Length: 152
Image 1 (cartoon, helix red, strand yellow):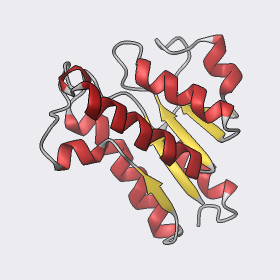
Image 2 (image 1 turned 30 degrees about the horizontal axis):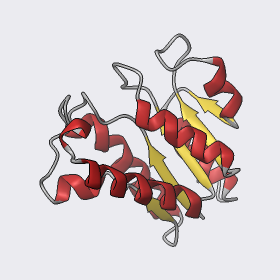
Image 3 (image 1 turned 180 degrees about the horizontal axis):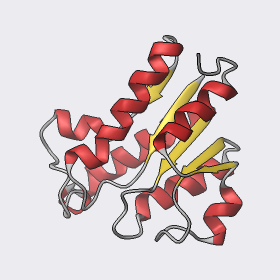
Image 4 (image 1 turned 135 degrees about the vertical axis):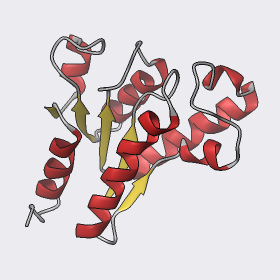
């Protein structure tokens, strides 16, 4: 099973944007070592081109932005499940919502992490989601259940 971990980056710190992804990846790989976890945004931090600040996506030139979008789309297409963590969003995340549309159109199993009344709590998000959970731990449990592993 392949998983894509989506969520806002712009306006978040590196820890806010990627800490939850690292935690989910670590837990899933513990139970299912063969699982592929896509975190495409990480490449920009590794290459030193982004700091996770408010202008992160705006700082990428058009060509790099198109490349990032193509890579994200390909990773979503290769995944069976796509997780959208919207807990830390301070504003509507345009890129994340585009990814949600791609995942829905491609027929992926969609897990959304958000709390009632949050900025992304919208009927379109609910309509696209197969499951909505309120915590990152809920995501881990859901994926392990889907994988037939369960939590020991």
